[in-house]
Picture 1 (tube, one colour):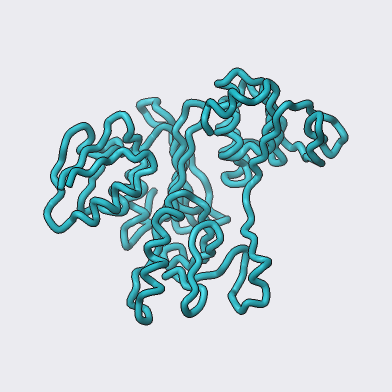
Picture 2: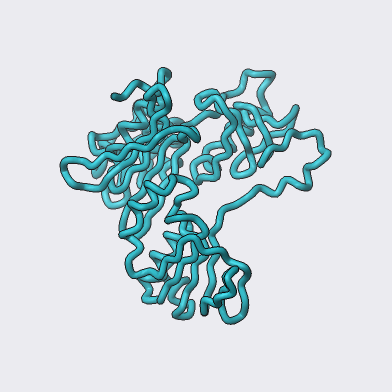
Length: 255
Length: 65
């Protein structure tokens, strides 16, 4: 979010949701001198994505913000945000960043397979002559052996060329689209990068580098194969993880 | 074709090397290894160079044709 847009706002800002969008908006708002309250339903920042243990690591960044976790919002009113316990949190400006869901209702009965998105194969094909790409596409990933719905910038940027090639290709002669998911966020003066996609059972392990610069978290599956890395101010960890994850025998054993 | 990676803009996303490894490489710290000076694109790899440059979230790569 551009600083100028925040500066045009009034002084008391309430942000609903402490995930990536929330963190970036909060950063811009406090930098612009606003008083900021953030209302988060989960146990901590980005806890829905990374779990409470990782969320705990983000907490120090939020000093100076009135961050209220485990807080359920009822509705937005003229004077501010009404919580489910009927507390009113006053606000001049309310910004909501609580995630997205694809709107596929209009495709019900179309014959396309829908499962929290439009289900497509590894060439982004939903049916003969029909492709889906970007936030709405639940694409089959041979690499991860499951459907992925990736709502990140690089998928929207690089997917359409493959979708177009699929429409023009005969049979299965078109390219396969199966990049390692990548996402980043600039917040509280930190560069946060996230590569890969952990399975629901994968366990996070923290890495405190000897040089004291930043930190990272790696997820491993039951067979000790790397499935995802979250790096804070450590692009080198992302580069190394990318080499592992992008190789054909990806997930080399790390011990 | 040549390319220039802006030192002030490259922040180690690594998307260039992920999408066009035949053109772009990363240094040990995860940044483009040619950052800050003009580098040549091998003949025949121009399209890959464009793909990698387009993939940079910070538009740090400029191509000179």
